[in-house]
Length: 303
Picture 1 (tube, helix red, strand yellow):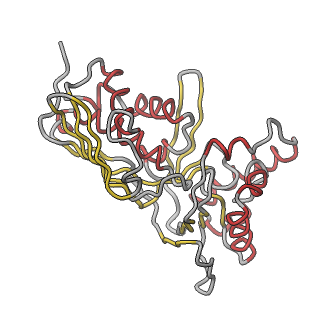
Picture 2 (picture 1 turned 120 degrees about the horizontal axis):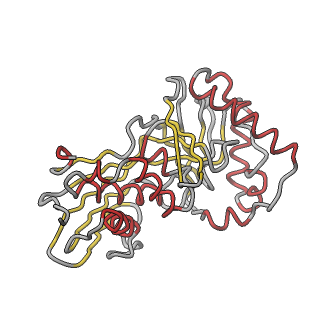
């Protein structure tokens, strides 16, 4: 028996995310209230992707687009592809800035495909969706908060990616400082050594544990909890502006970190009103997204 596909469009709103959060390298992530809006419908043939906003004119308009790739991979897991697809992406998450734009595309594609199939949310559950999204992205730290919302702890075991979701304290007030220049995860990872001193690993283990407590229960501890020795220092030479801004914010008591692989800077505590980062940075005060990438469409009620 083949799949039943929706005849009406399905929409998904995917949140931006910040990974690492200082010491939680490749494990901790936070969903933010900055969104891409994606819509997809089944067509008679072909695959077209229209991009508005961030990435317009740069990203591919066919099955090579990351949203389409994730949709097709999900349909393959479900056992059947539709005859054709038309996708529209209204992008607000900056590309290649450390705010999870690729994870938003991947999770959005997985969710769109689940929503376009009758019973898709049950046939292909959240755990399966997380595993697939993490496999497509290469690591789970951004896809987990994008899918689940809130503050997430992600890890990988034999069966693939796993994650737990926690609710951040109301006192966590994210603010991002977004530069005009882009950064790329692959080059940022290339700056990391193959081994680190045991003392640094021990230091980060303690800070990551403390950060879980600070984010969920006691934001007054966010400044010490966001100290890191595993990745930010090694990347500083390639992102001097980012490193300087993090240092400047931390010097006035702000719990500031590199957002993901950078170059965006994330502040998790209140930034003084008289702090001015300079003209190279666009500052945005955001909230924590509590819901993750939700699916809306005609087949969802049948799932």
